[in-house]
Amino acid sequence: MRYYKKQQMQQMEQKAVERGVSMEQLMEYAGGAAARFIQRKYELRGKRVTILCGKGNNGGDGYVAARLLRECGAYVSIVLAEGFPATDLARQAYGRMGAGVVSVDWEREPRAVRQAVSDADIMIDGLYGFGFHGAVSEYIGVLIQLANQSRAPIIALDIPSGVECDTGAVHGPCIRADYTVTFTVPKPGHILYPGREFCGEVIPAAAGIPGEVVEQAVPALETLGPEKIKSLFHPRDSQSNKGDYGKLLCVCGSEGMAGAAIMCASAGLRCGAGLVNLALPRSIYPIAAGRLLESVFTLLDREEDGNLTPDSRERLQKALEGAAACVIGCGLSTAPGIPELVEELLLIARCPVVLDADGLNAVCNKPDILREAAKTKPVIITPHPGEMARLMGCSIQEVQADRLESASRFAREYGVITVLKGAGTLIAHPDGRTLMNLTGNPGMARGGSGDILAGMVGSFAAQGMEPLNAASAAVYLHGLAGDRCAARLSQQGMLPTDMLGEFPGLFLEYAH
Image (cartoon, rainbow, N blue to C red; front, top):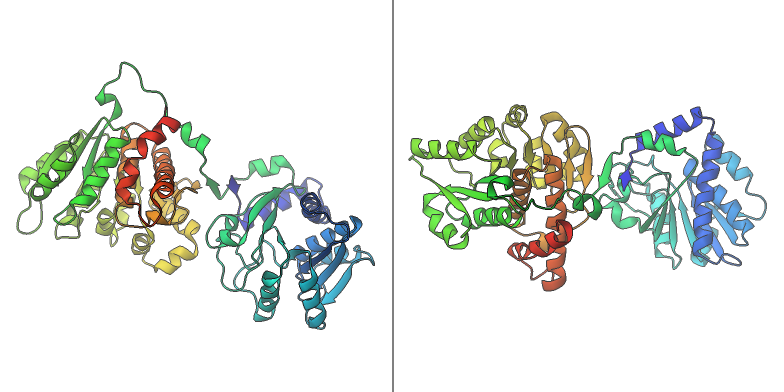
């Protein structure tokens, strides 16, 4: 599914007008699309339909729907939430409703409005459209709360009132719709949290904009689906060997954080890399070696100042030269010498690099290193919101307020593929493409999940997958493994390591 922002919708409307479709016709198409959906969904004859209308063109869509639903035999009441319509288009639509539609004013006739809301068999939200931003007034908030408390199903026109189109942000009272009839194309606010929780089932409906106009627009966001992920995998050559599937180097782990390194390397192995080389401190080698029988190891020693010994540095550089992809950061720690090590590896690597966890912490004060590193190879970063905030020099709340813009802007500015983890993980490419994942569940919200994801991304990249595809496949399958674990073990009881056991079954479906 593709999603388009407010500005893109405005541009599409303008292009439609240039091709001879009037704004009046677009409003008629939109209101008609909503009315047809409601007619298909419900028996209308004799039913009471209450339509909440704002003073703008979204209210105008409601007036068109009111006229058409009245013609279907429904008893229709219009609630003027903010008084008489304020735009020419909305006023024209209001004038064409006819005498059969009852109109009540929220300010002047609050009792009548309350009665219309209470009596409704079907409620339509036409308060605000895709241009809404901020929070509704306290006055309108009361009306929204009345609607949400009613027994009637609610159908939102284009987007529930109170949800911001571009961000999915909800800053106050908001219509909680059962269905949202979105005109022409879905909007990011339909799929981004928290707006997603208010939309109910989203029904895209043609609304007068020519198909070729829509096709020419570049979506702000696309969602990942199973067919796309399946297309990224191909049968293995019967004459291949381990060298054909890439060497993955994982520079991970520290004292007290052996588990992170083990999970990263385990995911790399389970996802098909030909060889996984785990570079880690010599002190935790016995722990890792006892768990990873298929991995090879590069053992690292440190001097008193925290920097690697010359021999260790040489071994690590040699391992990096032979790698097809590299993961840096899982459990690496923030000890002295780590920022210098991460910076050096980023700059000398010539293969795709996945930077996670402490690898990100090492560069948060010098993010320009990412831009420099990305000039010579693909760099994929996998931050959670806290790490993203440190990289951007802002608060977690600011990141979460507009996740789509945070991920896409960072990717563009620094030239790195940015995987912003969380509910609805986003994958932003420097060229402007942004993908969203819909698999996964809250049971994955625990330490270790990110280490497995980083190993998956690195494994697919080592096998030759284009970096954006490697990130997309990893994020999607990681979430799907989590969903299957939750179904089998519960969200409460599942562990990140349980997901590793789901990979073989997933690859039978997606890569067989």
